[in-house]
Amino acid sequence: MKTDDIEAFVAVVRCQSLSLAADSLQLTQSAITRRVQNFEDDLGTLLLDRNTKPLKPTAMGLRVYEQCREVLRSMDVLREIVARDAPPSGTLRLGVPQTIGDVVLLDTLEQLKNTYPDLQTQVSSGWGSTLLERLENLELDGVAALFPASKSFPEGIAATSLGRLRLLVVAARGSWDKRGGKLADCCERGWVLNPDGCGFRAGLQHALAEQGLKLRINLETFGSELQLGLVAKNLGLGLVPEPLLLASRYREQLEVVALTDFKPTVDLWLLQPRFAGNLHGAIELFGNLVARHLASPPTAGGA
Image 1 (tube, helix red, strand yellow):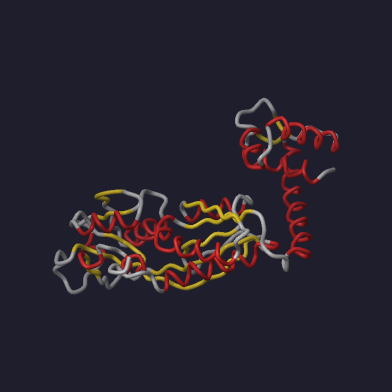
Image 2 (cartoon, helix red, strand yellow):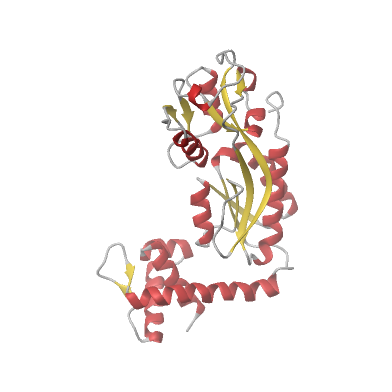
């Protein structure tokens, strides 16, 4: 049995498609088909049900798939033993939530390039849960994401908390006529938030549900800066990590709403495979740079 054949089979099951598996491994579809057939011939059994769409493994194929993932993890361990101290090379695939990307990526990527000039860096953005899933599927090498401190991560993922951030409720300056307030006081105002799937929004919705309150959405839009601009125009309340408020051009047009019964925090996590080989140092640097830029974001006047 060849490792390449095993990798091809795992990719096909993961992607549920020969063409998508070929794209993920940068191979032709015919090459993927040939490798999977070779693997089936070596084992003497059919591993894929080719009559289903999307493509699915047979009952035996599913058992083989789980074992193959263990084989590939073991291969990663072997590579780690000999490669960890080698200089980073090839492509570094990173993930970061869009929420913080605009604040941290410019300087972070510049410093990564200066430190590792021969390393090609690719960056993906998305929800933290999506980035974590892509990391677990070996589609990314490192992720800096925002999750609760109590978050548990899958086996095989090394997770390091790099710091804790306050999430602030913000309103248009002069529009909040209370010194403090409670979540219930926010209901009539409504919110400007990310679409469903955002962890911040989910946390807020959970806190409201515990009090028997409903989440009222005035506007849904991606991007913290756009959301803060809409909040500054008094179109609803916002929920934003403190560093992003400090870096926002709208900072002077906003005020923090200090709620007595809602003081959310979130941790910045650096996530990577337990065996990242010679990319380990570059991934660690990436995480430290992101944490540093979030700890000292550019002020609105200096942005």
